Picture 1 (cartoon, helix red, strand yellow):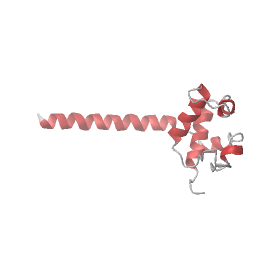
Picture 2 (tube, rainbow, N blue to C red; picture 1 turned 180 degrees about the vertical axis):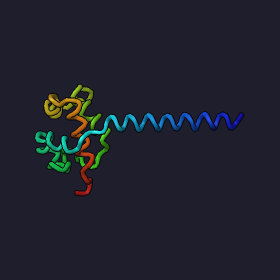
Picture 3 (cartoon, helix red, strand yellow; picture 1 turned 135 degrees about the horizontal axis):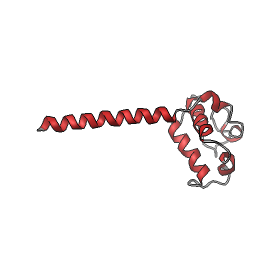
Picture 4 (cartoon, one colour; picture 1 turned 60 degrees about the horizontal axis):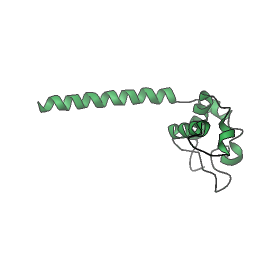
Length: 110
């Protein structure tokens, strides 16, 4: 009976990993395309994701998923920021994923 529980646990874990891999692949943006969309981001967050002033967050090296979710939250209003909302208002879902991929691909130490 114990081995049955271990097998179920192993199968459940394998399924969760597979779903996670599929979800990650579906969210993966195109960093090169993202670089083409960061013109409005550069003023505060820099071309390589290093903030231009201490009151702006560094984006380089952040998780792609985190960046994507943060941008979407600014866009939807879930994160209320009067500066960010108009900056992200016109971005498509693909733009968001691509920008997130670009900044996630940048070296946090540059």
